[in-house]
Length: 361
Ligand SMILES: NC(=O)c1ccc[n+]([C@@H]2O[C@H](COP(=O)([O-])OP(=O)(O)OC[C@H]3O[C@@H](n4cnc5c(N)ncnc54)[C@H](OP(=O)(O)O)[C@@H]3O)[C@@H](O)[C@H]2O)c1
Image 1 (cartoon, protein in one colour):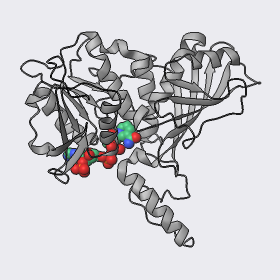
Image 2: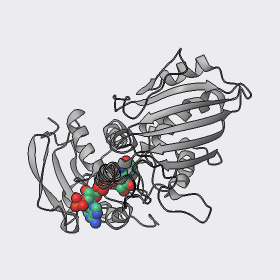
Image 3: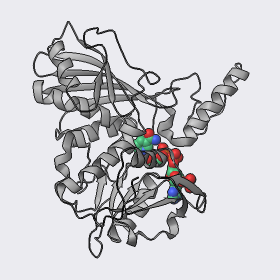
Image 4: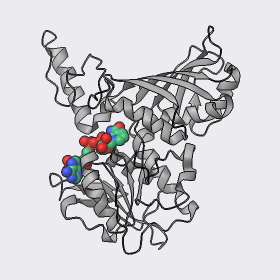
């Protein structure tokens, strides 16, 4: 049972507790026995007053607009970027440390962007902003594989194509994929209308995620470039992506081409990746084997397959990865950040609060 009277354990709030990431966080607290002294669930006025069962107890959902962060040490935010822009400063000024799952603070210079398996050293000091940012869901599994490759052979160039699931748009995205798939089967002559995905995602693939930028890239694609560079500490890394939404309910996949500074040996590469924490390599000796969103059932692992060195360029290789975007790409990464904080001797709460000057967009 995660609840404890231990005064060293944090008082926790989950903002966005009714959503896809928030409910996954609550499951993970129980699965991983993440200890807290108290747990408050927070969402919008729409679901305020409703109840959620978490950690064996029925808990009331609070309205963010009236919630008091004064009694909270650690707040997880996953309620959208604009919500974080407005309410994370309120939480940090009340003294809480925030782990933010949105895009609001990721590229802020005073905010560490952390994947614990890659750059936990960024947690050595309490950040000036009072915020630790959780990266984008496609970036997290990618950098977990790139980091050991860079250490061994040096990264020269990375090209990723993503195949992103409907759950990346939350519970309503998953519901829309189910509904439009049924409509399409019932009336194959008619293109269903989509709100979360346009055009509709059922029996379709859509190469556009998040808004289009003047550069011609989408914001999702820009996030993968900027965040990978920041996490790996390689500000000039040549890394680029095409991000595609596919009609899969959950789990993102990526086809990744990596060029290194030196020739790569496949056997050594397989051994290297298989030796990484929480990574499963499929087909170590049979390069044709691969994971898929429906068969990669161990949801807390990054699954890798189809590892192949390109014959015409032995410094380059391809791989295929599958990772649960709600867990590895969001909630699990956030919990793993929180789990590491005591090891770094942190006091979570900033006494008297701490202003969040100059942070955000
Ligand atoms: N889904 C993913 O794979 C993933 C991965 C990484 C990061 N993220 C980020 O995590 C965030 C949440 O994503 P999700 O997939 O969990 O979405 P979701 O299923 O749509 O859930 C959204 C949550 O935010 C709450 N919320 C919305 N507007 C609010 C407001 N004005 N005030 C307070 N609470 C509000 C909702 O509460 P109500 O029930 O009251 O509406 C709900 O709890 C997004 O910023 C997303 O970009 C998602």
